[in-house]
Amino acid sequence: MSPFRASLPALLLSLSFPIPRTPASAQHAPTPEHALSPHAEAIWRAILRAYASGGIRSEGDVTLAANRATGVGEQRNRPRVVLMARLGTQALTYRRPWLDSLTANGTVDAVCSAATTEDCPDSVMTTFLRLAQPVFTSDSAATVEVSDEALNPAACRRHAGAILGGVMQTRVDLRERGELWAVVGSTMEIGGTTVCGFTPEDEARAARLGREDSLLRETGSPVAGTYRVTLFFGSGDSAVLYTRTELHPMSSIRDRRRDDVARDGYKPILGYDLATCSAASVDSLPGSFSGSCLQSYYAVSVVPIANFADSTLWHGRVDPLVEVTFLDPRAAVRVEARSLFGASEAADNSDWYFMPEIWITHRDGRVRLDYTVMRGTEVAYKVRADRISLETLVSRAR
Image (cartoon, rainbow, N blue to C red; front, side, top):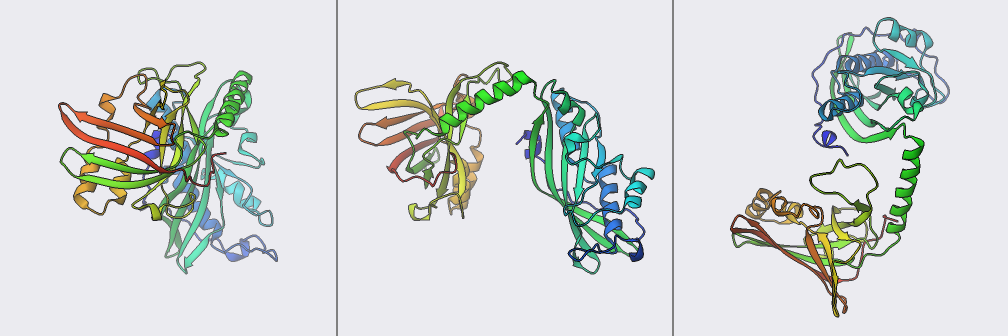
């Protein structure tokens, strides 16, 4: 997820768009399986006007904001707003005269009848909306699920270079006020970044990287297992939690340094992330990611730093501060852990800032990670992670 999305709050609106009711007689004739509410078109029109006016922040708005912040891609202030002409079920369609009215009065910039957004004719960053049928929570309140996809279809088709876009699922809440329907709130339920327009060279490179990542995920990690993790604070307090990893890597860590993260070119795999679940006791650890899994990641290098007769050293990363803020029952300890977020980053090595610590794997099966974080001349905290069993989570990483 991009950093811009990570900071995107759920949007709480207080917007009113006066939309006259559409008479029931003018609605699409019901089919045996489905029927439109008499209020559906008025509700949909209110939603579309909210997107067009910026009252609901669209995926296109998010993408263009990211472009402006980074100085790349289209630098427009607002995306076009286009309604995809197909409803979620093939048995039910919008009325053609109603679709025509949306463009005639400027409610949306266009209506696209193509099967996919990439087949639409637009040539700038555009928000493509798909509307579900209204679900009525009372006589005067309704919600609608809106699928929102942002992309520049023409740029995708040119295959001249990667173009960022995104997808977002939003729940829009509405209320009937007298004779009108009004948007009263919206909540982003899920979202993500998409990329299209790869050149043939980009696609070949992506295929190579994908194969490398696939082979990595077939490899069992030498540090996989169940851990007892102890956090010692400089204040004298301590906290204990338990973590279980998957056996196989979840994702690769490719060569990068703190001062050249934008460096182009091929980057070999230097390490990987092991997905983990943490709990306050061993018995509370799940067998898989289902249920109450407090998820995090352990980082491990693919090549050892050094080999000895009885042990091997690997670069890695374990930082349990976030887990402690969720699992420790003591408020003072949770507050202290939260106050130390980012403390380790100042001392991280520029070449290995994403795997700054050391795993030690012993020939007899023991595994340990032990490190100290300083703030100036004072100890901020110490971490010790000891493998207590070889039991791993049911893997979803392969």
